[in-house]
Image (cartoon, rainbow, N blue to C red; front, side, top):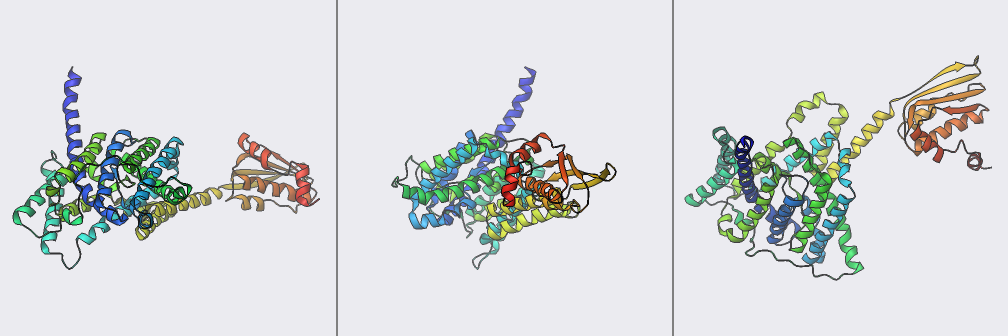
Length: 496
């Protein structure tokens, strides 16, 4: 009983934090969902319905508690051409197909591929997102129509966000900032850009519907390429965001379950008139910083979002954009990994190059997938180059100079194959050569081909060659693909 009494206040605090953080996220979701709908070329309700549906579904089926998903800019930009050329119905069908592909990826355990994304790539991804979030706020702070009132509201919002936690943490400071600045704007009748200026909000609940398109091969050829791209980008952003939240909360997530959850969410979104979406790093950070840790915060954000835009849209429309910009700037500052500047002197050169390249490509292309792809490729290149140098070939003379034993130590694969071949003296006049590879490992066909070259070069000089010490994995690879131990294959290769 003592444990139950002790636990109740803790659970009450967790529930309260999830409820309040979900409310903050819901308010911040509205202008972004509208903006992303405009980017994709569809009505605002398409993005709002998507954010509601995806948040609710992933709250139950996602693999990362506390992560917020919805309509995103990274997905919206990929839909522009499809919507322009074929219309909304094809977009809804593409959204459903995107979800099915993501579910397939989860069932195939493709979420495990995240282990190939290095820490440098993740750091670059985080920093690039922080920069993009900040840049996305600039249109609200620039232009001829901007007045001192906008900057005063922004300053007041940031002051509340950063100073209030020093007094109390019972209520999330971003929520206090939004509510208080909205009240001030209404009471003082300030002429400010508001959420209502972003676009017309829906006035009814979403209904189930299937896309009105012909079920033909031609339709599949139109939507499949876009769906594949959306599925890849969506999963990439979601899994990276999940990894970031893992670090922020010191907990683990189920990446494959997240793939399935995101897929289910997109299928459901497409069936109620919503666009495809994925995890939202900015809203997720707002949720975590506001105290949201569980699935309840994600569920509340989606449900409250729908209730606000449908039943309280007159009030929501009066929220000044400056208040939401203040929240997003807080997110940008909190997301950026400031320690990465200090680590530039301490970390290896290749790690810094990977991080900076990821940031630059992402910021200049506004495409997270391209930035991460460049980072992963550079990481692989640097790793292969580094491991390829860990190869040593030494030799010793035996049998009164008639035999030479070569000792190979290290990894033999495509990067180290040429140094391996060049490490032997083929012109030395000896009767027999022994190649001891007991402390080496052959990884790929390129390595096996290199071994073939070495053996055949010695044989051309009339030298007997024996390879000893192959471990089980290397022996299997050599037995399957090598030619030097297959006389018929050697004769064919030599043109006989």
